[in-house]
Image (tube, rainbow, N blue to C red):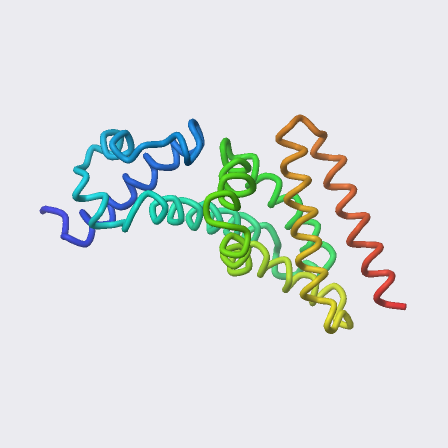
Length: 192
């Protein structure tokens, strides 16, 4: 039995995203040309432009997929019975594991802000991993009030800087411990 049009459409779209990811990681956005993406995906230029308005739209789709994968890994890390602190600590470790996927740090933390702009990248992140962090912080420090948004943003930036440092050869354990120290200090301070 043949595949449905929907399955073929999704398969073509995914082939373009996968090929695009490979080139965006290997060469960077600016150095990647659409003809090489099309050739690697085994589709026509028409298929590319049927699914994506332009190279930037394909790049945005690649980034969205990467962010969703990171969020899935983080969400899968905590057990229902975990307390707020344990869930956040598990999320820290899961974030670093997710970011260890080859090319992911470059795509999400360097290429995406440069290509899509920081506001657009931050908005996409707010729907994914940052949303989980915000919920975890709200559970850890219920009294955060108006500080919840800024604290989420600042801690998210700390996670990102740590991921970049780890990718550059920093000791993951040290960064996990440092973020745990930040979370504990924050919780202690806000409980006073």
